Amino acid sequence: MAAPFTAELTAREMIADGIAELSFAMRDPPRLDFQAGQFVSMAVDPPSPGSDPVPRRSYSIASQTDAGDLLRFIVRVIPDGKASEYLMSIPFGSLVRMTGPHGFFVLDSSHPGDVVFGATGTGIAAVMPMLGEIGRRRESGSEARRCLVSWGMRQAADLFALEEIGQLVARAGAELQIFLTAPDPAWTGGRGRITPALLERLSDLVAPTFYLVGNGSMITELKRELISRGVNRKTQIRTEAFFD
Image 1 (spheres, rainbow, N blue to C red):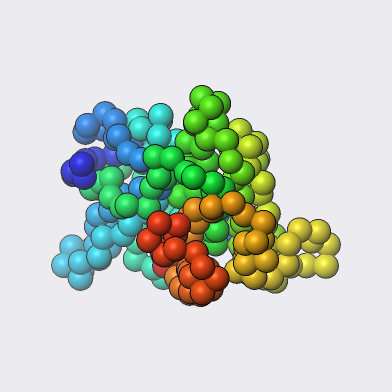
Image 2 (cartoon, helix red, strand yellow):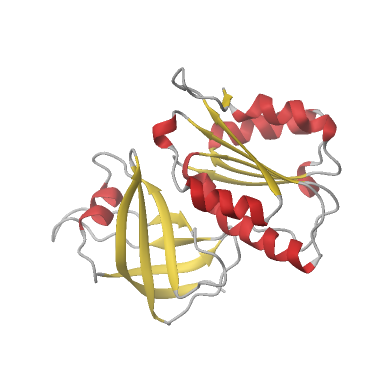
């Protein structure tokens, strides 16, 4: 159940062009129980007394669900963005007020067939703990179908956490495909948007459940195209739009 809590900023690092990873140690209470895919809402203090209030910001939890004492977030740093300025300037040790966990973009308790993740940008942060959960289910024998992960970015310099994501993909027995919309000539991975690539694979999938997260226009388009091809909107598609 969502509730207010406080957490202390313990680490902050730029992990790609315009992408930061921040870690917060839980303080009150000492642990947050959440489901993979959920997010928290973060209070952003105004830059100075008397300044206009800054709306709360929501960030998906990139931590694994068995590590609820330390919350990780992977966020895009927006130039001149009030939330970005706040998060990138507060000193280590600062206590930040949050509420959570929030959201219904979580894994189904079981899947009748293949599991397909389609993510763009920092939306992959929500997928990371989901892959961890898929891996634990697979090791216990409760998740045996194929798992596909399609991640879309603009260029190679935007990619982050590749080693960690690779480990999560391997544990989940998944297949990872990365697509760049503006790759340099040396890029050997996928090119273009993830939408046509996922649609091309649809005929090979068995009773798929789709988890789509990231750019809102991608989600709208891909959801529409999947439905037009017979995918059930209510039972086979889960979505979480990022303002990324």
